[in-house]
Image (tube, rainbow, N blue to C red; front, side):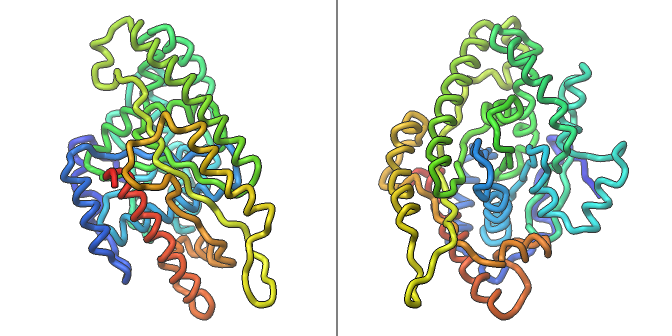
Amino acid sequence: MFSRYSASACRGICTMGRKKSPQFDKRLTKKVSQLRANGDGPYSVCFFNNKGGVGKTSLVANLGAQLALNCGAKVLIVDADPQCNLTQYVLTDDEFIDAYSDDSKIESIYSIIHPLSIGRGYSHNLPVKKTQNFGFDVVLGDPRLALKEDLLAQDWRDARSGGTRGLRTTFVFSDLIKKAENYDFVFFDMGPSLGAINRSVLLAANFFIVPMSIDIFSLWAIKNISEALKIWGRDLSNGLKLAEDPKELEAFSHESRLKFLGYVTQQHKERTEKGSARIVEAYSAINEKIPDEVRNHLSDLMLPRKKLSAHLGDIKHLASLAPKSQTLHSPMINVSASGSYTSMRKQAREIYTAISDNFLNSILGG
């Protein structure tokens, strides 16, 4: 069943019942402890691309599992996509049926935004559910979230002119992050659009990561994201300057603080030639363009780096491991299966250990 936590009751909630995988990594755990000691948490991270089919949900879930199970992190993932793919992935079949069998009792992301839409203000509680296999907590997705797109769009117009109601609606996810104060990380899985829901999520967060497939449309998406974020940040800044009642918004009245943390590429299936895998030439050419596109369009949003690359990692095509992971509702690093899955599971652990390392280094500043 669900747990509803007040902001003061969240302490330590992710440590209960957490399993450590055999690949528990003390080196990465130390980096999580460094971030925790900084006192700047929770670190809120959006996984966003307005192009679909880039492995976004899989990345969010498996990186979250790696950090929770192997690095000792307290992780909350918010399913902010009305398609609810993440929720279906991380809940067992029985948990899923139990959670959604009675729509009058569903505790989900809809429970957070609905009270605001009917004039009751922000929800007092954070409806979280523990996952059985992934080690993190989740705010479940809800198809009804799509019904609130118009609310967020209408109130955005009010927010841009300084209206208190509009700004409070825009900051609904800022309030969610504030209530998650005792987590180390709050991740948002998001739908592939530049709509009002995603705008509110992005304006609330510290960082965003762009999952990418190696194709021409992903290159175009980088430019789209850059242009949208510049417009939204400018409009929010203007709205805050015109705010009718600044004291009403003291907890949230910040200009957009969003920074680009990096990108993760999803590798296409390799072809085999004379016993060795090779990258198809066309994909290789596109892959080589990505760093320049990122620098050209997202440099203003990048964190100051030492010698760090914006490329956080490359997710290799792991054949049937991904669908097996989905069927078992288990992270790829812990899929219980024999035969060829043993080798693929090892590769998944190597991939997500590397991405976790780069992710933590980027936040720490190298």
